[in-house]
Image (tube, rainbow, N blue to C red; front, side, top):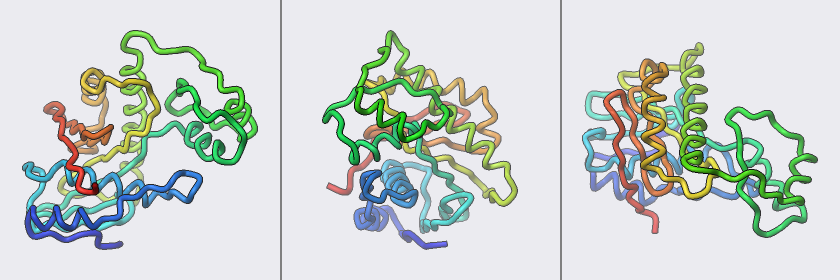
Length: 234
């Protein structure tokens, strides 16, 4: 376990967050799970400043299963984190820095939970750079909601395994890196909310926070709220 931050009030939290190293290296340059976790938790907390979700004194501890423990005034919140990214596209990002290919590439469809492709096949796709089928109507937003639901369901299952500790509140934090063109986030969240409510998500997590673009979407069984990220790292 590692104590990441301690703040007695909102002003202290803002100052501490400013000092957090949120840099996320390229996947080919040593990006780790810890980089994305630190980026995501710092941005989520920045968006929640001034909201009733945070109480002081506030302490954040980095740990395992779940990934964080957020201690507030008389409450402890377990926070599990995941990055929503197509595994084959993530692998391609690494390979593009190692093989000859076009400087600009098309965004392709990905299926949540798709089978892992061998590097040779991915290199062939990089070099061919074919556009593939496009998106029509609201298919971008529907694909996004399917992808987010896939990662939510994975974490629901993980939270039931032996060794996963539960607290007074339990949150799920998703760092959205699902590659899609021109996502309408207002429409996307309307597609996702009923799907989450229909799932067993809120039996395991009180909130699902999704960092997407410069906003954080906060889903609960009472609805969805959008928070703007406070960019403290300019």
